[in-house]
Length: 116
Image (cartoon, rainbow, N blue to C red; front, side, top):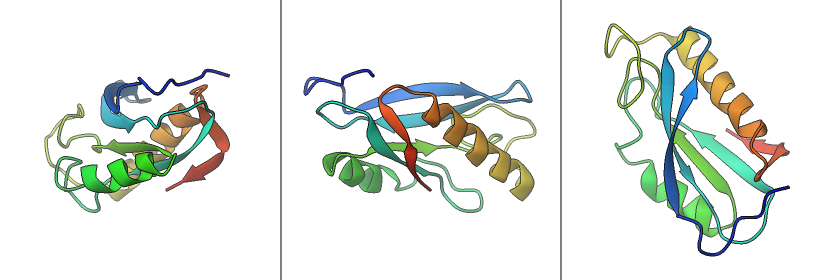
């Protein structure tokens, strides 16, 4: 188990590899205290990006002791992928699975407490 200190940064940016070779950009909001913590994984619906209003929700989850992960789907925002801004619901479902799998591997996250 890894401990997070009260001096941990409130948000970090990570790049999560996908099976296609593209990377998903995510913001990880880290609560204070020791882990492992429950996690909330979130992305906007349809084609919006994490910068379009997910931060206040993620910050509130962090304040309540959750790790919050807000990510951009492939082909959108800070994530890789071409062509840009092309919506694919199956690919978005894959991206959720990829981010959830990545989260479950982090020592500061309780893999039994994943909320999407």
